[in-house]
Image 1 (cartoon, helix red, strand yellow):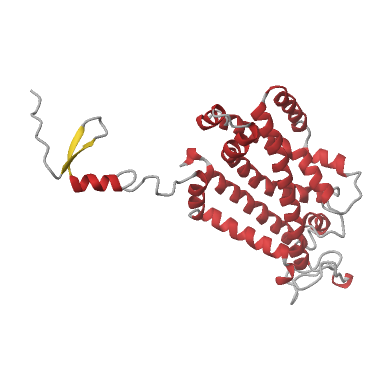
Image 2: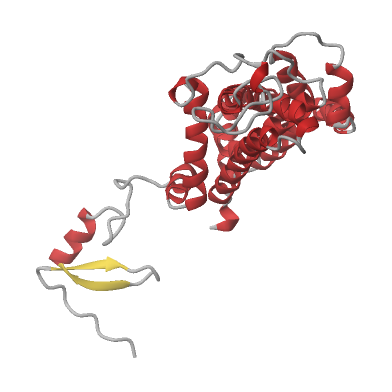
Length: 328
């Protein structure tokens, strides 16, 4: 038999339970539930909502890999902007009488084959490598994201044409393409190398951006915005782009280190940056013929290049782990 219903008593209230029933509460407890947004723990709309980016930043701050790589990159950025903070000499000031000499007071890394201070050239070479890597990454990310995002959003013929174009660019070997395209360039500035990297690097970002947009536009909030009459530009900028950026950022961060290594490779082969530009690739190329007699000429610029590339790869791995929901 059902239990008899007790008469209502003053000072008590009936509150609904999650199972569809009711429970008997004191009036003070009911008032507390009403005043507490979202329930007794205060997790209602008044509390700031957590997002993917805020969670990622919280995880990154606790990741020692991110902290170490970030400090290394910060140091490289500082000496790239103000190399005179730790190197007071001139990278182009050379003395042939000191060619291939080892470490001396005031010259801890010794001298190269032209008698230039290896320490000063190593410090100043960071500016060139970071400039090429950052500008090439920005160009690749911007061009690839725009083309891939539009192809993924609109689909149809635009998507088909872009997919075939990217297939053609993927078939071109990067180093071979650099040897062919940059061999006819006589400029000693960084712009031909940056342009080459953007030309052959955007298809990878384009593929990533296309897939992210296709996934994002199928979500319910995008369909709801479309049903409410939102324009294509509003859906792209307000709803799709913020939720499709994470994979692009991860790939671009890792690619930055790759572009720095590619610049050094092309400069080593003689088709990248050219003297009098100070570059780690140029110094490695000039030191390779003296590696037996003066290994210090090769050790320091090659070590700086390896540390820089490793720092950006570690940073990209940390960002990937923080932005990947599957790893939470």
